[in-house]
Image (tube, rainbow, N blue to C red; front, side):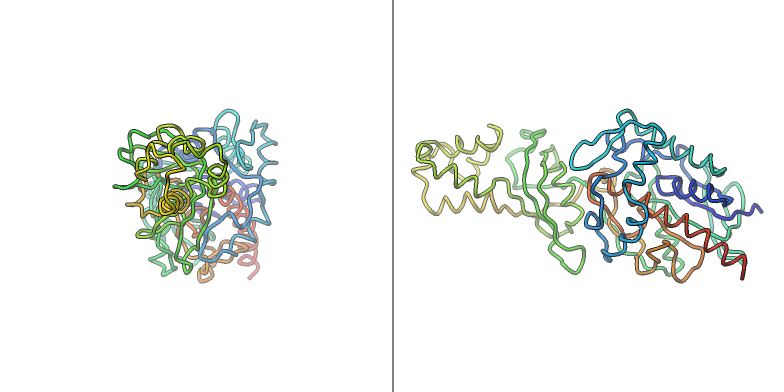
Length: 408
């Protein structure tokens, strides 16, 4: 039976980064992954260019039942730290929007960088290999796979979340935690388009592809992740609504709740309609100032005011316009599911973990990192930064955990 200082289950962003650091710190490391291709989620992210971090990443960019949990890891390994590593490897990158950093060329460069870090640490990576059972033993943890048996004093679970099952996503870490009676927060798809069965537009397909800025808010149950507001672009699709605004809101939205969308800024609308020169313009003509022509006509028709001049609009209908376009509320039918989700909300309860090490309090030598933990970032590189930060603090704590055992 082969023996290691560290066994990492999962060769994604967090797993590979943790393994590389631990190996370079002198640990004998084995990484096991069930996928035929490792780092696939990194490769397809950001349209193939990987939004690998965000310049402004901080605790406020994350959801968790324990919002303070992320502070230690983010402070010990920041976005600037990862940027320096990217620069060290000569990977060209650019800022796209609100601090979001993307590779100029290909996300494969990030995958190769992680593999190079593992190579520097003499990390052994085995894939595809299926982990079948994991049990505690006198020396730590025993891992049995379809190809062999291994033991290690430290076990790192970095198997990710449930999004995109087509590339190997699974609930392996969550199932394993439950068997050990480690609490798990219920999961749901996040950063995912929202579906609507009726009520938005006459025919969704007629407006698919139209994008424009809105203000959106979601999340009414304060006992969970709270309420959040985002000013971003909304995209109409054949099946519902997407775009950065909706993806952000989806992380806070829960089934049965409405979302609120400010299609039209009330102050700007009142400024436009308060101009005497616009008295004889029709509602659809006025709405064209804010929306594409097709959409302006649709909204005017929904209001029953298509072709009606502003001077002829009653006070009741003026209020209707405000309620419909400035304070619009509707309940989505659901999300488009795990296949379209970028990340997962929920996961390993952070109350069971030490924030400075990512180790399970009840099980010395057992760590959970990355997406399988109940920490979910906003859109824009924050989830990758959590992978890097949680992996870093875990890898560095492995040294202390091992030395304590050695000298005891």
